[in-house]
Length: 151
Image (cartoon, rainbow, N blue to C red; front, side, top):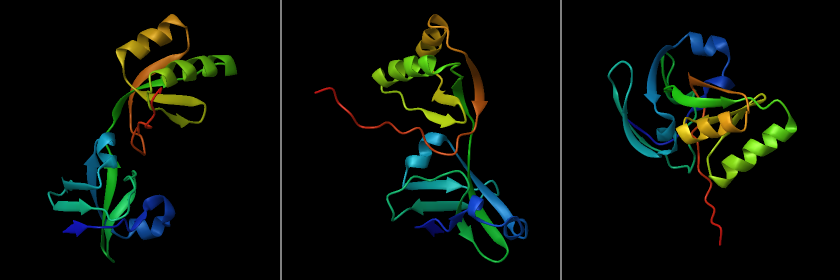
């Protein structure tokens, strides 16, 4: 089976529509969400080729295939993350500036900044005393580097 477009995302479906179908999952590392062409295997052992025509990243919950009885859904494996919880606007500005200088991609959930674990960032956070914790957590989308140069 070759998938060329995403059917929908389960967040856009009604619960009853999801529950009435047998679900298979494709577990991906967050970095693989950016790959438009790849070969994957479902948790039931079914091999699938993904060759997306649209230039978009995969997202947790994307439905690769669906009929009246079955669906195949993208899920993401947990990442080793630093969950940064600044206590003030000054702390947020300080850490955002520091991480921006390193071109480190970040994601935001509520009042937390999520970055992939890096021991140098962990040391920086300890040094400048910004609250954080390290944990394994699933993210919905890939950590994407934004192209930039200091010319």
